Picture (cartoon, rainbow, N blue to C red):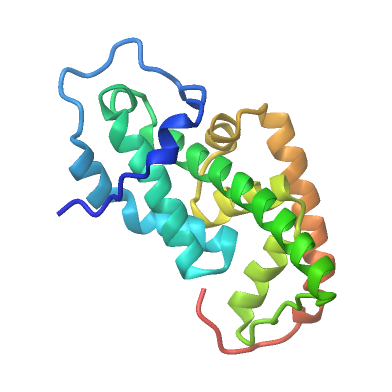
Length: 193
């Protein structure tokens, strides 16, 4: 059963640039329900890696899936509909982060209270927490490359940039993570990948 919540404000958003519209679209396009069942868990994992919060990740996935469902006749014919959905998710995350930062700054001024981050105790969670500390684009590239196992070209298409830009963000992200996580070198903690 389809669990996509239709959200009225999504219709006001602009349509992201299509990812690799297929010239020779197949005669049979995968149904949205089949796509949803196939990709939901991976998409949720990707969103969790970016946000570090299950509820935020689920909200982002539902927003992106709702947008895809509305336009599935077009999106389903793309070479990489999953890439389009990920681009929508990344764009929505950016919008929500901007709104959240603005709200947080306003609340902090009103209450004179600062928010503190809680560091995860497990090694894997600490790695992804470090990823979330990276500049936005580096974090997105790292998450798409390592969590989603996307190629450099796929990442470039999803983020609407060149492969050289992706390589630069990947290199800088790795360097920053190596410095941030240098205390892991030589340790053998029990953890799940």
